[in-house]
Length: 148
Image 1 (tube, one colour):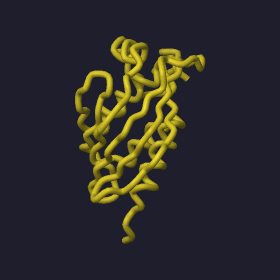
Image 2 (image 1 turned 180 degrees about the vertical axis):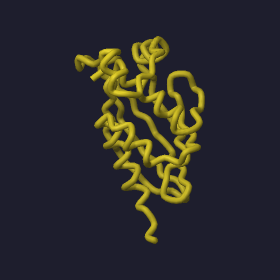
Image 3 (image 1 turned 90 degrees about the vertical axis):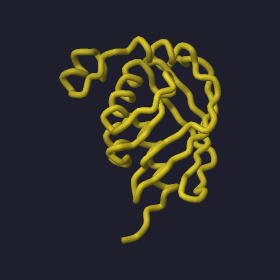
Image 4 (image 1 turned 90 degrees about the horizontal axis):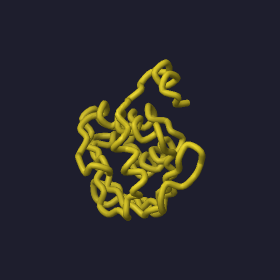
């Protein structure tokens, strides 16, 4: 079995994130993945917590990530990103920020993501994430909550 191109996998993951394809992104993660909650500073454990996190963020914001360098370094991949947050009407939620992420792997799947550096997190995004408490997971729940 051929080894996966980890740099290509990370790049594809950011494309899925930009497209709002949570299921596609989660398919690239181990079941017990460790992922940062950039608002609270907590470490999320497992794909269910990661799914709930992204669903909460996408309730009020569109995230656009532009990739800079993505390199393999030992057993990890390092990605430099330029992140923009927009409300659902397309208005910016604070200033863009530069973030450097380190991805760990188990086999061909991402097993961890760690923020190695991050710019200031927009206060408006932080406030909205903290206020969002509903985690719709079905189309009916999304329709009921007004998310499309």
